[in-house]
Length: 312
Image (cartoon, rainbow, N blue to C red; front, side, top):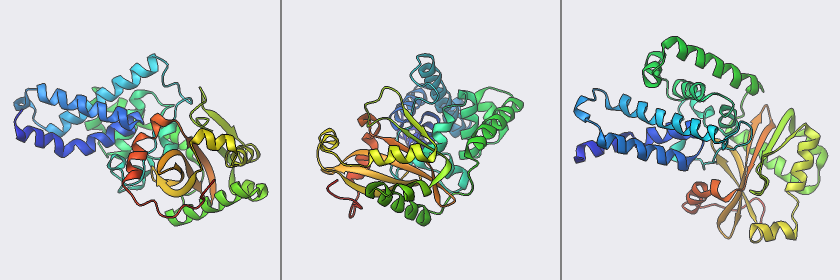
C-alpha cells in the first residue's frame, strides 16, 4: 500500500474509532474493528472507491454490527448484564463532542441504554445523533431503505427518551459540586443527606468490584443509599482486595463527573454519575481490571492533583 493511501486512512482513524466505540461500548473492541477496517482498505481496489470516507464508514459500521450480533448470539452481551468501558475525558475516542446529542451519546448512561436496542437501531441512532448522517447516507451504509432508517431512528429515540426523562443535565461545575456533596455524605454516615441527593427513580449499577458474575442493580433512594454507604465504607478486607490504601479523585469520565479510585498510582475502580436537576439520577461502578486498562493508561499521563479522599 502506498503512503498516500495509508495517510488517507490515518486521517479518518479517529472518527472511525469514535464511531466504533459508540457502537461497541468497548475501546479494545473498537480498536480491533478499526484495524480490521484498515485491512479491508489495504486489500480493496481503491481506484474504484469514489468516496473513501463513506466506504470506510460503511465497512467499519458493518464490522461493528457483525461483532455485536456475534456477541449476542454467544450470550456475551445480554441486555442489562453488560457495562460499557469507561474512558477518561480527553480521550480522542470520545469525540465528536460539539453538540449536546454528541456528548450525550457517549455517556455511560446512554451507552448502557443502547444495549437494549437491536444492532440496527443502535447503528442508526449513533450515525444519526452522534455523526449527523442523513437517512439517505445511513440507508447506503446499512443497505436498508430510507424508510427503514427513519423507523429505526424513531424507535431508538423513543426508547432512549423513555429512560432519560429526568429533567435537564447539569453543567460541569454544578455536577461536580453535587458529586462532592454525595461523596462527603457517603463517607461520613450522613444517610439522610445521601438520600436527599438522589432522585426518586435513581438507579445504581455495579460490576461488584469486578467479582460479580452478573451486574448488581439497585433502585429506590433508600436501597441505593444503603448500597453506596456500604461501598464507600473502608475496611481492611476492601483494602486488601484493592491492593492497598486508596486515594479517591474527582474526574470526568465519558463526559460526566466521576470518582476514580487509585492505589499506588494505578486505577482500580471508577464510579461515574449521571446528575440531573441537582441530584444523582444514576451511578455506574466499574472495577473489573479488563475494563479499566485504557482509563488507567490515560491516568498515568496526567497530573491527578490532590485527592478528595486519601488513605481510604
